[in-house]
Amino acid sequence: MTLRTNSFIKKLVVLGTVGSLLAPYCFYPKLRAAERFEIHFDGMSIPISIKELIDWSNGEEETNSELASWLNLLGFKEREGLAKFLSTPLVRDKSMARQILRSWSGRKLLDEVSDLILMDEDSSGESVLDTLEKLLNEKDEVTTFDLLNSLSVKAIHIDLDGWIEVANNWRSELNKQQKLTSDLVSINELSVKREAINVLPLEIKETEYELISLNVPHRNEPLNLDVWNPSSRNTIRKNWVLLMPGLGGDRNHFNWLARSLSHNGWPVVVLDHPGSDSLALEALVKGRLPLPGGEVIPERLNDIDNILKAKELGQIDISAENIVLMGHSLGALTAILASGVTIDEKLENRCQKVLDNLSLSNLSSLLQCQLVDITLSKRKSIENLSAIVGMNSFGSFLWQKNSDNQINIPLFLTGGTFDLVTPSISEQLGLLLALSSSSLSRVLLIEGASHFSPIRVEGQMDQSKGKDLFNLGESIVGYHPLSVQSLLSFEIISFLEKLEENKSIPPNTNLNKGELRFHILDRNIIEKLVKIQ
Image: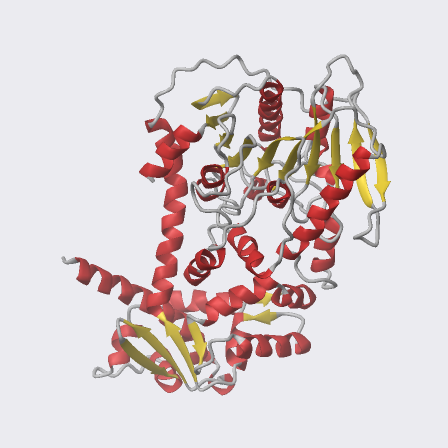
């Protein structure tokens, strides 16, 4: 069978699936708004009228009907299942749905989907948005079927070639993530012996923190800071740590890490970022505010500036002079941008390609590409910045590999193989190659860890999921989150200890601690991994 024939058969199968999506129209002929569907692929266009669909659903299949040949690929059970799917609520909370649709990310996704499913000749997505808004005014819940049957258009055009490309891109990204673990085994050429890993206890009780409210000129409300000073000052550290949560995160999500760092001699300041913390996420859920995104970064950077200034003025009692910026997800990106590195001028071109592909296997790409529309003021480098530690960091679209924007600040980036929000290959590995020229930089890759593994929420010590707004269960948080947090604590401390001595952590692959397998990767190993992907 030729490649061309193979491709054609795949398209027949996909077309059959598209036909099953149209089948529920057969059961409600009086409600239909569109006259026909048009399926486009390989330069052909197949119009499908509602009447023919009704005849087909009633079993009236004419032998000379070309449409019947396509629709016979589907069985009744398949149609019935998809009809049930389309009657399931697409929107359960209309207030939250409105805020998501009004956000930059929501509108961008709608724009890109509209290029693949056109209402008449409208590629803006406005007709879909207007229809959905009207339905949300009338109903508490909106199903996919409600939306399709309310669209006042003559024809719904489906770009089958475009959807096949999206599916192939998605599959390719997932395959890369799955291949990463086996590649790490195949390139194991190292013989470095690491010392036995005695991971710190999960709960260290003796260290306490001080809550400080810091008034800042760019916010209407004060910044809340937890200042963790070591209970014993016998170990004098050169550095102190500023730790920032990610989007929707709070400082109490990282008490486990601040406590461990302080217990080992490092002063730590953990802050909340108003407008992008859990209160902002709660406001989204309740339909009061839109989904926060890249527009919060300038204020987050101002938060850092004001904390550094307060420390210089003695408003924050910390003796160490040098600083390590540390963050999770958006907090990690904020730390990188605070270093003074500038975004690549070709970001818009790269983002156009990413958004055209509509690949959602890297959700952070949406937030990164929003920075095309956000002006970040030029920043001076922080003179006493010693290193950046990023948990589930991202930003690989902002800088090209081996770009001129590389910084000589050591980076310690951590990630997991179960992370599709900031996938390790494109983000942590790609980010180190694009940004760091320091020989001390490393990536910690933990097998089975997800984007949310570092987040400790109330109640997580006693059960599989926590009790706060995140309500994270094992299906989201990944494999053994508490063990992952314990390992992160140990390896971050190891990095900071070596940093104090201006030494690097030895790279190695296929390391084990308990039920976890993890890898410490330097630039050389990462380049080999990326090359064989």
